[in-house]
Image 1 (cartoon, rainbow, N blue to C red):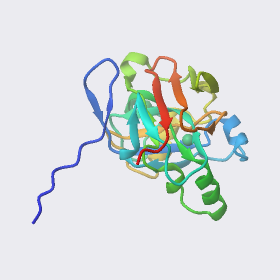
Image 2 (tube, rainbow, N blue to C red; image 1 turned 30 degrees about the vertical axis):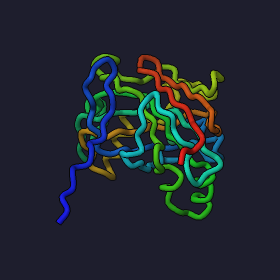
Image 3 (cartoon, rainbow, N blue to C red; image 1 turned 45 degrees about the vertical axis):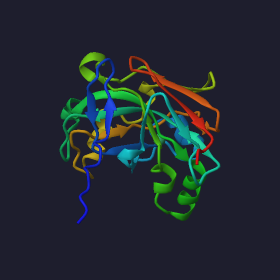
Image 4 (tube, rainbow, N blue to C red; image 1 turned 180 degrees about the vertical axis):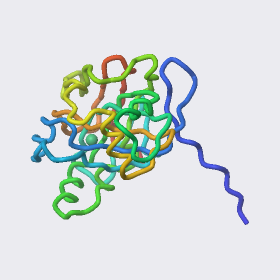
Length: 231
Ligand code: MN
């Protein structure tokens, strides 16, 4: 019988230290900034956010050169605030939700927009649109005890120096705490969970050669590039 070595534990850099944050799952909320909901053709007054997830091995860290993904000709950027939880639970209350957040980072919910349009039309799952290889670039985490709760602050993304997305966290329809409350009604949240909290308007295509920079006030910036697929 063959012996298998354990697979590596996925983790994220913590800004300013050599320590790493071990990652359990990646949850994502969609439709959380009204202007983006409208640009995607939906009604921002829907009664709750949509949720989907990404595999943890989709994480890529700042500085990466990412191969243009397979199976798309319409790769899109979505810059988002990412929460990292140090504790969880089920049916978490609004009062205790903020206390579950250990830290914050800026991330990009890379999306195969063509596969997403097909899935929406067919009522099919979003895995091919959202959960593909290298679909979760995330910058270094900043502990909440250093940066405070992120209720407001600029969130932006630029491509080759041109700003494409530029908004404020205060525009989020549901706050970080509310997203945790909603998620914990359907899943038991645990230490190590990451939560993407939705993107502002201005999503658009990326192509090989593009250099992406994004940030949220007070958090470490995230840089990556898209390169032609290496065989
Ligand atoms: Mn998104």
